Image 1 (cartoon, rainbow, N blue to C red):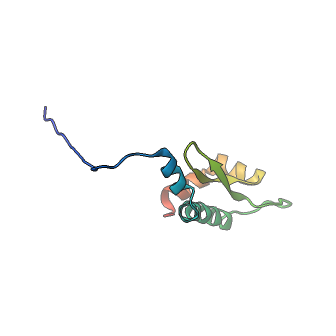
Image 2 (image 1 turned 45 degrees about the vertical axis):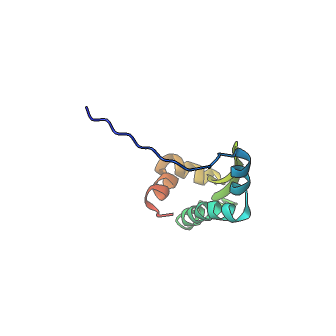
Length: 100
C-alpha cells in the first residue's frame, strides 16, 4: 500500500477564533453570505404557485447565529410553501441545480 504525506507550512500563522469571528461578522462578508440565500429565495418565490387565499411571502431568508459567526438560511414562510417542500423538495432541487 502506498503512503503519501503532505506538509504545509504557514510560517508564523496563528489561528484566532476572535479575529475569525470579527471577519465573518463584517458587513462585507455578511453581504457575500446573504446574496446566495436571497437569490435562492427569489427563484423559489418566482416559481411558486400561490394557493387561493394564501397571504405572506412563501420563501424567506432568516438570519442565524452560529458559534463563531452569523449566517443566513432559506425557509418556508407559508403553509403552502411548506407543503410544497414536503412533496417536491423544491429548495434541495434549487440548491443542487440552481447555480446560486
